[in-house]
Length: 132
Image (cartoon, rainbow, N blue to C red):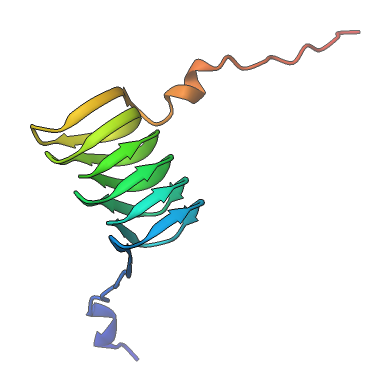
């Protein structure tokens, strides 16, 4: 009636997609799992985890849970955890909850802590009701 199988831990494997150094993509990318960017992309990327390697280039916006930037990036980032490597060259707005940064990166950025800042700043319209 009772089984010990429920005590075993299940191993979840996530796949990684790689955009190699020889690849150039013009367009938006949406994927689940991990994305490693070693080539050039002009477009927006939405994924669970993205890593832009030192030879990678992205001009567009990123939406992800975890973002690591070690290459050239121009655009806006919306990430729960943002890591900036020493080889990074970044220009844009970086929206994050957790930030990790190495010295030596070239930054022309605005750092915005908290992913919901834009929502809080917009005033909500109140409905007017007539009492009769």
